[in-house]
Length: 410
Length: 159
Image (cartoon, rainbow over all chains, first blue to last red; front, side, top):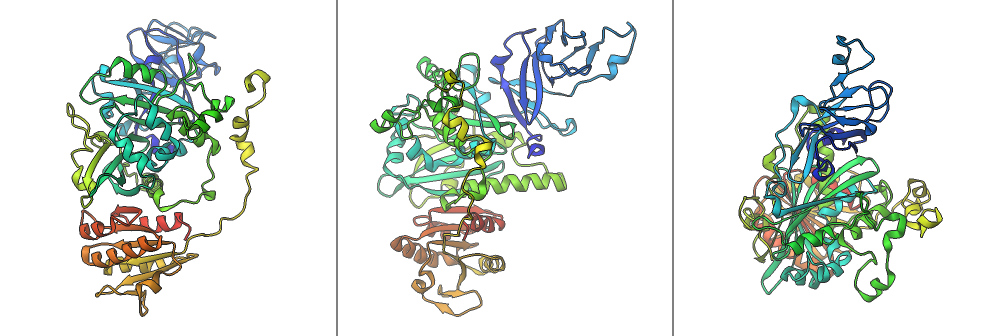
């Protein structure tokens, strides 16, 4: 699976983590590799092996100055490509440092995110084109949080529409980024959705259908782009949101959560709600990306709020409602103990697609779905359709990201 | 609380890999009695290949040209008899010929509280009518070009 992830551009960190040239380097752990990111004197981004090639000291202690990162132990200096520029103990005209290069990966700013590609440079794909990173800055907001479990069990929540009616029922009524939409009524009135799962070029579309007015169904359509990008169907004119799950190692992942509006700036109220941890975002411990409600404080569970009906599980906030249960499964859930039901077909199909893609890559070198930027141009949608209509047929335009056009929403 | 005492919270301790070792480890008994019903000839070929695998409680049927159900390679069975005792019915279709049977199965399952899943195999939308007939009743419809989806679904459902 690690090789599969190395076929894609993935979020490495938020751009806000490297706000200035010659600023402090930042430790980054991705796909079980320890790295350090920095922004040099010319503003170039670098993502290199965390440890100095000389004696293995961490370059997190490095001095970021004059076009490179210098290990403070003996002064070896590296540029953003990991190329060693200086080895002070060598003779002035020594070519030794030319032969010293740290492993490095490209780091590119697109939207609020710094993206990296950790695969073979010879097969580096074009840059990602997810709509949320390409709208003007005033129309988008991205946060991230540390989630203490394997990425897959976190991601699977993103294509599991049936939990919303239960776990997030409180949030549908009260969350400032969710409440007030007509679609919420359909959600709450019909707790037994029906599902349709269909292949897309980049992954899947999962349609969840609930009863609406006579002769109609309310459809919520969730796209998954391989390996780990999902979007939540929109509600009213609220911004559209979604996630990108990135493995840190086998037992931890970063959850990137975004909100954007395709055709208008986010209001100050909306943006503040996102900063405050509403909607799909979390309120994090200042200076970190660890949620304030986390497993070390039992997620600040409030059984009285649960009794009052304010929250379904006692945990506040949609993001932490999901994370608390996904982390409770253990660092890597034992799937041999599961009892899946037909409503889990999206998850069943997604696992199969990931496994098939990993095998095809390993055995035949087949490029997996979701690498082509064309596959990134998708949207979630929420629509009411006559009962006889297929969501795939009726929503072909609705699930396509077309810049400057509004989302299809109820 | 736990930070103040220096001890792990209940959630942190319970979610650890070490604690995962203490989960009760008993085999999961297959809990579903499944009927897999092929609606057309190509679907019947898929069903025959699936039937060659080992299943706990799955029976494989096909609809004949007049919409009657038959065991694979066997005689006709009334719909009610074919589905008696089933708690999940997986309907396979590759084209529209079986739409009436799909609707009959759907209605029956709805009436008797049997969960229904539909898998429509093929490229494009060769089975639009069968899908439309199943839609009101099937808890899930899987539209796929990949025959192995049916195997994966049945395996995941532990039938």
